[in-house]
Image (cartoon, rainbow, N blue to C red; front, side, top):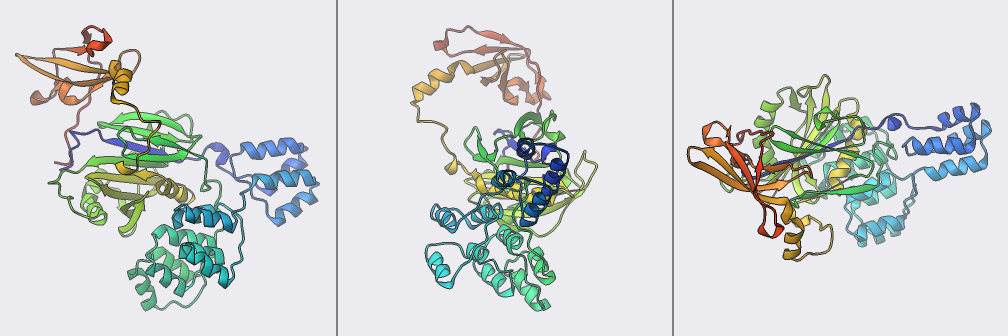
Length: 472
């Protein structure tokens, strides 16, 4: 049984809606237009900088700018705004630091660097521990049947296939049905096999929506995960159906997490030893929960098979989804991930409107890849503190709540001061008479630690929400 009545279920929704300045990337054609309109070099550079896009200037763009009368200084400044080169030495340092193939490929996707790799260099880098998928990316040749077989033998993640396809493209070749089926059975994603059959071209470096951003960290209060997200995002908080929801978004003007259209959310549940999912692997656990998910979102359907994946360093399962969520008026696409660690179930959902999902999928997967999940990975915000220091610092924020339920009955429990004006939060079983329909108590009082010198104070119930467990 998932004991949602006994624990605080935190839902983290990360919205990934691009701000209006990122809706259209600034291009060389835009710069030419600004130049012809009479804007100065400084004004043009400032416009590109504030657009939020990763400006990419090709050789054709340089020629167009020169033809429009752009100075060498302007062209140099614009080149400096573009993606930075990623030399082989940087890739070697990333591998030495323990970065995964996914993380290194993300960096390569964000860089315009073209590499040459001699056989001796490839052998040396392989001996240094450079992942084979990264060596293929450095080599720069379109993926073919034999390379996909080798990647399958290395058991790379589904995202590695996708990122390699974006970097390299696929060599168009005859693909007999038997070979295609063998690749899928070996673990190659069906969309990758289809791309090989079609000979899909490379997509090249990532656009502004998928480029690596400067990240900051959100630490789960209980230490269950550390999420790394772009620094400029705003934070929304809300309580929905008894669950605390934190929403991080680059969009302004939204009041509640449910208002966002493109989101990345994390939910945490406790699985008791006698839970139906106890002892199951992530794939089996996700299959177990799919009927519940379908009951909550009947118009959102699986868009593929459940496959092994990772969230951070945790083994997980992944399922693509497609459909129309409740309270939305358009089709969405997304992915749901599920992992289990020491009895904690982590559910990660990433979704966006169908037309926008391909643009934002890499950023969502990047958040998954660069974040930490599991208590063992939780990082400390500051230096260690002695227990008495923690008590002295926070004792005025913790109270004992006494509730008079009437008829000689009472309840008590811990409460936490959550706002300077005097709001106190506590559990439902403290504030409500759950044996009699959740009726409020007759009166409430707060007792502070004796060391604070504060007296017993009366409390007034300003709001309560209780939802019986859906997982019994």
